[in-house]
Amino acid sequence: MEVGAFYLPSVGTKEEIIQGMAGKRTDLYQRMLKEISEHCGYMDDNGYYGAGFTEHHFHIEGEEVSTNPVILDLYFGMQTKNMKFGQLGNVLPSQNPINLAENIAMVSQMLQGRVFAGFARGYQPRWVNVLGQQVGLQEPGEGADYEELKRSLFEEHFDIISTAWKKDVFSYEGKHWKIPGKPIKWMAAEVARKYGAGINDNDEITEIGIAPPTFNKQIPDLFMPFATSERSISWGMERGIVPVTIMTHPDVVKGHFEAGMKAAQKAGRDVKFGQGMAMSREIIVADTDAEAEALAREAGSFIWNNFFVPFGFNAAVAGPGEGPFDPPGTFETLAERGLVIFGSPDTVNRKLEELLKRLPVDYFWMFVYNHMPHKAWMRSLELLTTKVWPNFSDKIGKSRAPAKLVAHA
Image 1 (tube, rainbow, N blue to C red):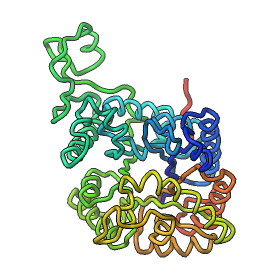
Image 2 (cartoon, rainbow, N blue to C red; image 1 turned 45 degrees about the vertical axis):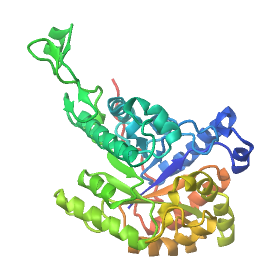
Image 3 (spheres, helix red, strand yellow; image 1 turned 90 degrees about the vertical axis):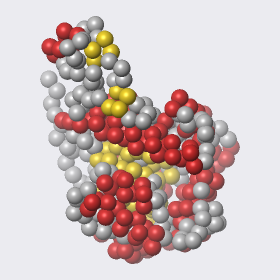
Image 4 (tube, one colour; image 1 turned 180 degrees about the horizontal axis):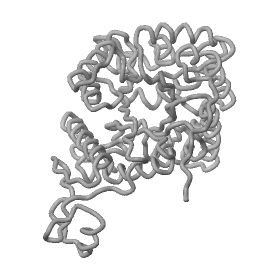
């Protein structure tokens, strides 16, 4: 099992966020960059798979300042040698898919393949509708038609990105995009004909290609957070995308895993239960259970219950027959239903053993709310690395030599 860190790059402590407008403070943003750099440096030396970042805009409140996760990938990737960096995920409906394919390919080249790519549909109309207004997301702006439009854009944009990575040149015709569209008369036709591709006998551009490609034309590992329905999980598994679940009820998750397994088998991949799946939980370890609980109460619960629950995210902890707004928005709900796992190393080991025995996965993403005290998180990470994860992954806790870099002329 691979283990990575899934960041909501908050700026400021809980107290600083409560003061207001933390997202506009340079000192807090610089501190966030410094602290996550230290996290990544430690994980890079100890066998972790990678780190991923959300995409969100306009978060002047400070709780999730992750305007462009691809830039964060490059920033932290340039400071490390082994880990992969990516997005969990880029919100495809409001993105230009060709630009995004190019940007991830550039980072792939700069990090020599140490990238993954994650894609999401988006749930925050404050920015999705504003940035996506040119593709119709401001109207209808909400409701069933809005959700279906986001799904349609998501699926088409993913197809365009994956095609751009796989082919030297391509054309595409879908519901929302025609690439390159009408034939384009190309003044440098002879140059394109001699040294490139995608031009016809009438000196018209009929196909385009991104440059550079991904490093050695590798397709990045693909993830889809947060997969909360059998339909989404099946769609991803059919395409070799790893769905990331935050659902906690065992019966709900079991149904999702079984649907994913059937979808992968339908696509010709022989997978076992949980294979090709990922899970995300907040995990906090301290020397004692009491210390860990005190930290956990002030960590993810603050952001989850204030910023996520109003959007219906308690669907993640809902049981069969419950709606997203039925479970109370409290720390106790998150703890009792297992979205946050905390305790001493022994306690966390027992909880993870029970969880992963029932729901095995190929990837485990630690949900990191980095507004919690930096020293406490570094201690938690140390205990996880030395006393917890080695019991579940043969890759964690072992120092490794830096990946071999390709010499540049």
